[in-house]
Image (cartoon, rainbow, N blue to C red; front, top):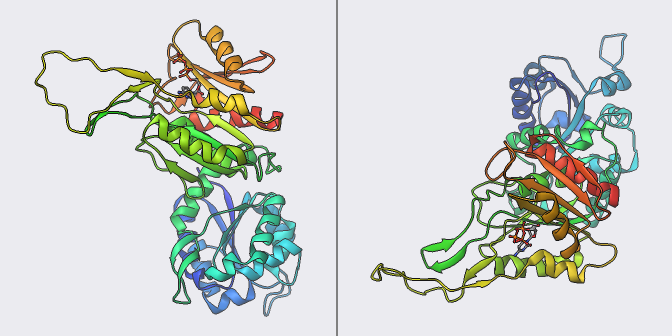
Length: 405
Ligand code: CTP
């Protein structure tokens, strides 16, 4: 994914600067071309020689080079890059970036960059939680920059808390995933989802029969997780209500794990009022055993029947109380008369959009990495899409949502 990409790594003065060496090494290993620019104080933590050796190129610190007549042109360097990653980003540099204080080469490069910029902050917990840092980072997100979440753990001060820079492999993973987003594909334009609160349900639900058995379905949660990740990368604040799924979710997305439809409903109730957009991508079980057994059911009977009762229809319940400014998006999984059923669900559940996937389409359905969808809006306008990866399908869906925001 990063093979052949021109990546500019900006290193600030922070104890986490030692991790920049690993980051540069990983980027080079993945086939990227890397240039490094350092703030003057970064030299107190790591030498330009280390970063120059690892990046296989001269490392830039000042506008002028000692004993040379040429200079380091900040504009050339900025325009060279396909993407810029500031790692570690100290509180001081974050503040300068937010306020356009151009007092060193790194800042000159940042202000000249036209490419997407990613920021991996590193600082002590109190600095991280300070209102000033929060406000600066918010401002940078409004400028279109992406912030890579910090980790929690032991800090340079000896305190334990939030503020550790993301690990180099997490940064690389983030950059790789970000390359697929609409934001980068459209040249880093500011997304309309920036700052929006998005509630997403995903995965199956398991309805207990007894302590060891359940009624479930084949949903893996892939589509909902892809939506959550792409929305997050477009700057949204994502709350994912996730049924039992074996998949991992990138840091930065708030995940509420649930098991049953009833739990999913309760979790949604908590977050629905503050959400701007709700995407109901979960494959919720329609029925649950009416009285699950507290003990494991023994196979003594030759036959036995289970009495099931209908689960709450989560999307429909919130469709009834949806505010004018809230958007709700549903899915329909159909095997026959797909369009007819999807249009009925769109109306019945008061959706603004419904995403139809048909199990009869090859490459579409549970557990697969691809999907083929049709999106229908509230005016019954139909848009059909080709078979694509679930990440690309997520981008198509989010682009449709952006048109309604
Ligand atoms: N949905 C929900 N809660 C339920 C059932 C469905 O929130 N108890 C949501 C799904 O997440 C999806 C939409 O409603 O966005 C349609 O789900 P689907 O299973 O296709 O439809 P159902 O309403 O369950 O109808 P049926 O199973 O009869 O096709």
